[in-house]
Image 1 (cartoon, rainbow, N blue to C red):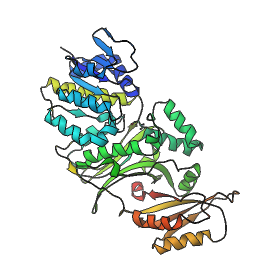
Image 2 (image 1 turned 135 degrees about the vertical axis):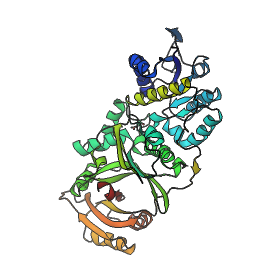
Image 3 (image 1 turned 90 degrees about the vertical axis):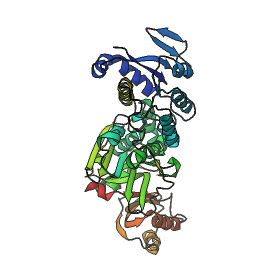
Image 4 (image 1 turned 60 degrees about the vertical axis):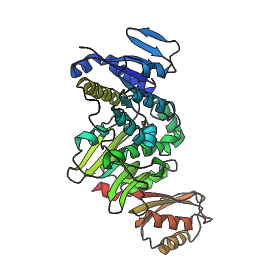
Length: 432
Ligand code: HSE
């Protein structure tokens, strides 16, 4: 049976892995599809000389791939928001379905591209853009699409989870671990996108669309990275029965949607606390199906499986004569949501201070908290000989983000602080 022809743009970690899977696993893929899936053309700036061998064009020009008359599906795997946008638009202009792993572009302009794809009667597919090795978008679009999603909590950045768990288990400093994550191909070209939470935030914007049928501007989502976390924070968290993970949270409550990406205390009894290294996990609570959990590699070569599987699905659709079976984000129309704040969510907080020791510190901090009617739950201090940089932790009873921020604003100028207090929400309900 005639092959369906794919064009690939970008042969980095994800593109290279996709190509390898499509080539090495071609026979198994053909047995599943009933026809071959062939990479007809591929573009990469790593290719020095244009060549055509065994029915495959290798070129530096993405236009040549997109415009190639035999290419029926285009995989955009260059990343970034400039050339990638042109590649996707160029393919859709020609009515060619697109498979992409580009969370940054989708978080930024995904709704616009989805609408354009619908106008062109071509599909836009993005499984690899969120939680690389986990088919979470397929789950939301098909597997549990009859449910009404109430909450989603995810570990969505493999690099950050690798950094946090290396710090937790080996007590290593952040810089050394980030360098290792880069070497292993997990980290973005600029790893600040990982450790500052930007990458996870783009993924959360995509997940929010799939969960709730909304378009939320990525930059409006509350974001805090992991760069202030230190090994001592794990010691205190453990003594309270918690660990620390960078969590993406999307919840639907009485005051509307709440979206955030921030390092959070996760109870050691919660499944998400067990996620180690570059693995990702997504925990979803539905009104009818209750809770389900999805786990797998979040970054690097396993992401190629998501791209190749998307290509297979699109190839099947093309063969069955159906060009646009399901909407890109699982809903035909996304509602605009300008804000999905967490200011009014009430949570317990873990606040770690680093101070030059002297008499009266706790009393002073307690006064600022009491002023905002924030109750102290516990005060923890491990023995330390360094009285110039003394860490200790105060946990507080549930309060709103706004109220806590006001109390911390009152505290931040105090002369005994070596650095600003680190406040992390305690996700107590995940442990139940
Ligand atoms: N840099 C990303 C991560 C790659 O660490 O999760 C996958 O999006």
